[in-house]
Length: 458
Image (tube, rainbow, N blue to C red; front, top):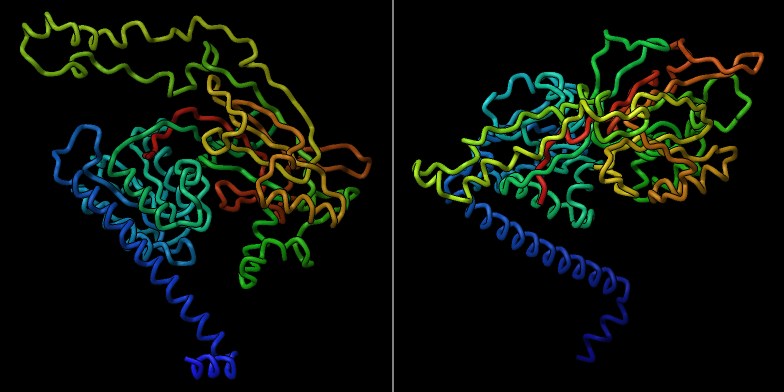
C-alpha cells in the first residue's frame, strides 16, 4: 500500500490525469445509464397507448416534418434516437418527410396526406415558422390540425414555453417529453401572428405572401448580438460575452447618422388596442367564428328511449345552446381606433403571450411590443447586452399591448425631418428575425391570430 502511494506521489501529473479520466468515465457511464432507464420508461408508457384501441382524440396518422440540417446537422440523429422510438411504439402510422433547403417546409405541407391527424415539426424555431406558414397559407389561418413541436434545433423558444417544467440542460428528457405529448394527444390553443409587408401608408403589398410565426419578431441590438455570437461559435460558452467586446459586431452607436444604422432604430408605429371581440373585429377573428358541433355527435350512441330519459344526455345536448356570444351586438370604439407613435431605440421585440408569460392578460388576447433602451456607447452595449442574453425585463423601457401593429422604419433627411423609408438600398444592410430566421427589414404589419394553433402539451 505504501508503495502505491509512493508511486502516485512520484508521478503526480500522470496520476492526476488518470484520475480525471476515471472521473469522466464514471460520470459518462452514470449519465448514459440514467438516459437508458429514462427512455425505457417513456417507451413502456408509449406501448400502453399502442395496445389500446384508438380514440377520437388520439392521433393515429402522424406526419413528421424533419429538418436534418437543424442543430448543426444533429437533428436527424437525435430524432431517430430519442423521438422516433416513442412515436413508433404508440401504434400510430408515422410518415417522415425531410426538408432539403431553406423554405422547403412550406412546399412540403401541400404534399402531406389530407387525412393526417397531426403534424409534428422536428427542428428549431425556423422550421416551426416555415411549416406553420405553409399550413396557414394552404389550409386557412385557423389551424385545425394539431401541431407537435420537437425541440431539435439550436433555438427552441416555443418548445421552452410549452415544456417549461423541464430544464433546458436536459435536452434528452426534453425531446422524449415532447414526443410523449404527441402520443398522449393533449392539446391546447395558442396565439400566433401574421406578418405582411406594407407597400405604402394605407395599403398592403398584395404581391408578397404573408409569413406566420408563434415566437418572436426581433430587431436591433438583441438580434445583432445573437447573430454575432453564432459567428463566434469556436469560442464555445464564451461566444456570448466575446461578441460584446470584440470589434466588428456590426453595431453602430452614432446617433447623428443620417441613415439607419444597426443597433439604432427610429420607427413609426401605428397600432390598435387589444379587443376580446366586437362587431368591428368579429369577421376578422376565425377563432370567434368556429362552428358549433352538432349535438347528435356529442351525445353518446345509445337507444332512443335512454336518450329521452337520461338527464346526462339531455345536458350534453344543451351544452352549447346558451354559451354562444353575439359579437355583432358588442360595440367597442377603441377596437378601430388607430394610435401613432415614433420611437427611438436600439432594441425592438414583438411577441405573443404564448411565449412571453410576463404580465399576461388572460381575458384579452394581445401581442406585446417591448421597446428597449437607446445604446450610445460601447459600455452600454456591454451592460445592456448582458441583460439581453439573460432575458432580464429590466432592459425593457416601454411596453405596448395591441392586436395589430404597423412598424415603419424612418430616417432623418438633411434638414433633420423624419421620413418614412421606401428605398431598399437604405435598409439592405439591416435585418430582423421572425422566429430566429433573418429577413430583410421592410415596413411590416403584425396581426395577432388568437387561439389559431393547437399544440400538443404535457
